[in-house]
Amino acid sequence: MTTTIDVLGLREIFEQRRILMCFNGPFSASLIEEIGLALRHHLENVAASPSAVMDVFSVYIEMTQNIRHYVRENGLPDELTRATVVISQREDGHYLVSAGNKLLPADGERLLQRVRELASMDKAALKAAYKEQMRQPRDPAATTGAGLGLIDMARRSSEPLAASLQVLPDAMAFFSLEVVI
Image 1 (tube, rainbow, N blue to C red):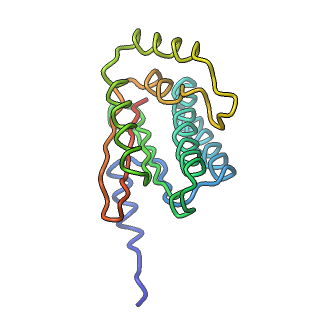
Image 2: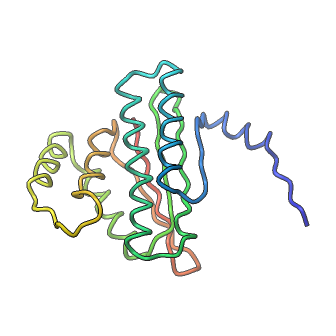
């Protein structure tokens, strides 16, 4: 049986929610880059401030690369490289960068706890946490960054980070993160 997609209905939902970009599927390094460039050009064309363009772009890149690194480092099946990313503009003019992906529930709990810790910090505490993390010795065998990504997103955000974790029936969980620029 062939299922049709109500594209007009989707478009109306996107318009109502002021969604500028939405992607759902597997991420590759080249796809992350191409979508990021398209996002940057779109924001520049709608006369977003240079700082907003850079912050939205940086948060998008950080989120998508984190998802990709997580799957690779944990040796998870390729189907878990699928993620959902939504960039929207709220009525107050702020941009909302949201992303979600499947992960192991224990990893999701740790990540959720870290996001909650960062969300409770003010700008000065986030700056101090960033500096402290920068001073930490970096494992030369590490394949990802120095653990600064979440802190950097929290520093760029105009509101506390928001996250959720939903346990799924397949022994996995779905983690969602929202950053307001």
